[in-house]
Picture 1 (tube, helix red, strand yellow):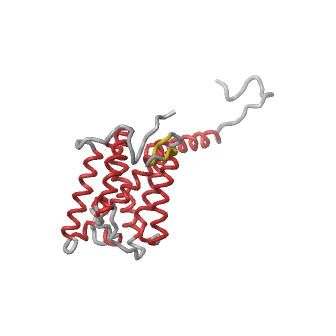
Picture 2 (cartoon, rainbow, N blue to C red; picture 1 turned 90 degrees about the vertical axis):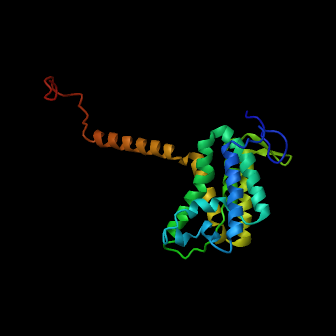
Picture 3 (spheres, one colour; picture 1 turned 120 degrees about the vertical axis):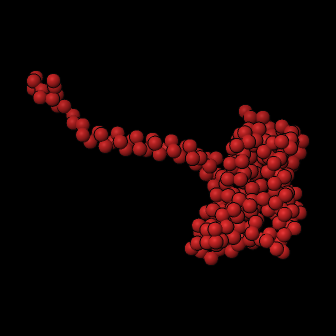
Length: 239
């Protein structure tokens, strides 16, 4: 059985140092948010995600830059806490490269998908992604623990239940603000669940190779014929 982890209380493996990937992501979130707040009345809006402009006006940096922007102090604080604590635990379990792939890659991929959709649909813009990154790590943390136990503000529960709570927060924001306002969150959570439940590029490649091998074997089997038991002694197929 996996050891109990904790969130929102004492225990666990401790907080990461400033040299870790989790700490660097936290610093980047705070710096990006401060930069946006300082330039919001000018060019700061270009840091946000505007789906219609990603490919329409080639603002290709927005699916990455929006991930490090939040405008409300509480959102900056809580998202930073998730990145530093939960991200630090995941970095210890996964390593820094995989943490970066999930924390930044999943919300960025969601942003580019919305950018493609923005070429055909009149999607609104101005999306901020600090909470998106935090929600992705929240759910990833829970799913990684799975049936193991964690501690949520003193309440023991399974990792899967912890991930469900993260999804519930997103659902509540959808119910209060509408699905369109939470598209990056919803899409990112779907992507991270797909990734952690068997949809990683490596696994997809293995499934494709298995399917291709099975297809080749079926094609070859069509040219094989069963030799009857009552064949003549001098079989023409034998040398």
